[in-house]
Image (cartoon, rainbow, N blue to C red; front, side, top):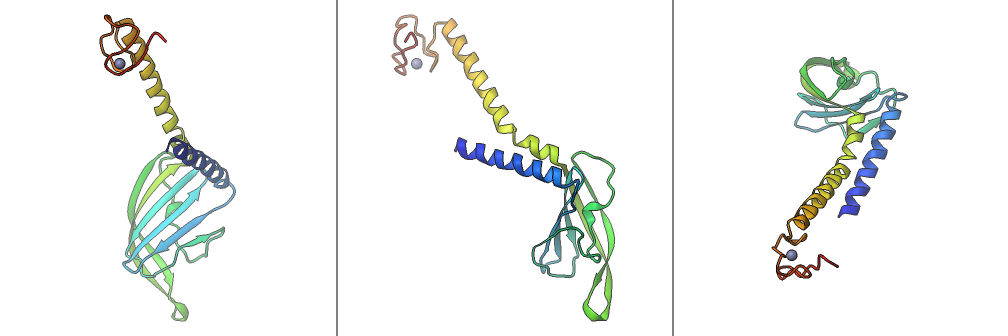
Length: 176
Ligand SMILES: [Zn+2]
């Protein structure tokens, strides 16, 4: 389980580092929509990852990864200017123009919400389990030495002043 978590964190770190670098050279856009009018867009701007949820989308589109440049008709919500460079959200309304085949296009008003996450924050997430492990190990060490000082079993805290060589409670042998 711990090994799996370490592996997942290593993968997350590698992916975020790769995406971070790539975001300065290429524009990626992954989008998908369903028949209920929900459109999901994941896109990158230099150093940042943006997830946009749109309501009122008229087309049913399969999942697609657009390499740069995405088709000109596709509105890119997440590449609109945002005020902050950190983790931030934005929402609003936007008119989009969609092609409807040979007949031309249609204009519609959509509502959107954007969540922006810097790649640096995604990379930092990968170190979180390591920090938690270090903090827990330090706490165990502190607890153990505090118990030894007070003549208690370092493993379970039982009073060992009468039987210092062997814990009758948990079987630990602290002097060994
Ligand atoms: Zn004990």
